Length: 564
Image (cartoon, rainbow, N blue to C red; front, side, top):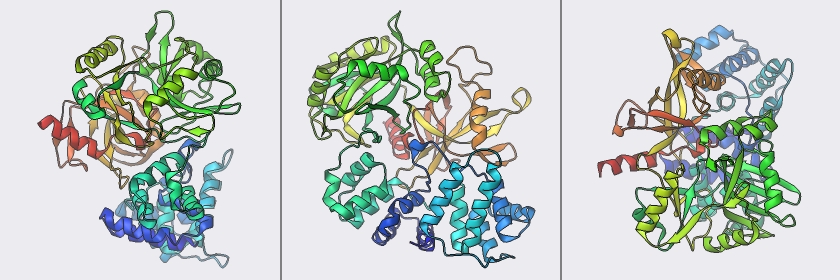
């Protein structure tokens, strides 16, 4: 399929603001996509080149995109930069320059979707000496072969900002509309495959009923079932029903464990492969699970002081998630245990539609429990509000985050917040937000980023909506191993700086943090229409992706609940 056709769809999507209109445009287009370019088309529709678990990006900043445009069109870099300052959009600049370019090549050909996607993959995979110059030449060649409208979206794809207002929610609704399917089932199918192109391909080849039959593929991470929040034990039990299983909620990070033959892999909820970072966990799995069976189970990896039998705070274990070297040293310094709480696949059979109480029995029958290695989550089954409350208080006194309430007869619902699983934490509510901007400090903080603009997300459009600025909760100097300093934040974010305007810098949305706040109030200052009053940093969330951050719907619900 020609890239010009996809670029025209981008233009149409950008020209309308209503979600229903975007869904209709995309639903019509889905039926026209060439079967051999489904994967590439859907990846570009999401503004993506690499899957989340590949942990790669294109790696071309604005200044290098400007150099590529200069090379392709013959215009001076300073002139291009001046246009960029005026428009604030390199896509618009690229469209103008290509329509007026000084030099044209006689060797150009019409670009296909595959051409564009594969070129971007090559750019992202380049390594070694002279890499940046090679990337610029590959990108320049795309601009040389492009029409003005194609150049506009090639530039935006380069900077991972399509500006078409289409997120996963709209794509799911569009596939549902195109094939007359329930959106909920399309969402479940996508949460299992994590690939829209593959999903549509299977629908076309096997019929639309395949969305009701898809099973996890061992070795490919799925999107896990998510919990909703409750304010009390009574409210939680009212949601999931009585009796319910109440489990400890550990202050670690959620992991899905895949075993296929001799291959064992560990994946975070953000679909990041952390197998190499936890060789000790791999050994635990070999010891505590049947070696002759394949499975997919979920659990929590938690820092654990084996001498004092106490759990360690999340900030400690987060160092192991990010570590790429000195793994054996970290295994000794920060020991961990695994607490298993669900099973999704076992011995050739998907358990997604099996009631939770039966899934739990399977776990109890197959796991050889060892408190210092792997054991099932500590839990009770109760109908009593008072007993559940006592169990919650016991969890808090043991240094845990809270408890989970689980509906006994519920299936597993991948990728969705449903009433099958409810979390109860101490009354003070926190939010997981994305850093999208920052300001350089002054005086003793000169050269450091010290105030961070944070945002929540719109599930349908994929847009990030600002909710406040966080400057407290960080340390000037590291006083304990769990502290996060302004210097560490600056080091972490500097590679994601996209543009600078005075002291303010725009940050590519990659880093999720957890914040507390005093109150949510309506405010025209931020794009969400709301502001967090006195937000303060609690901790980094390297286990969460931007897609795991809290949503505007959640923010509005919290705003309404505080009014109640």
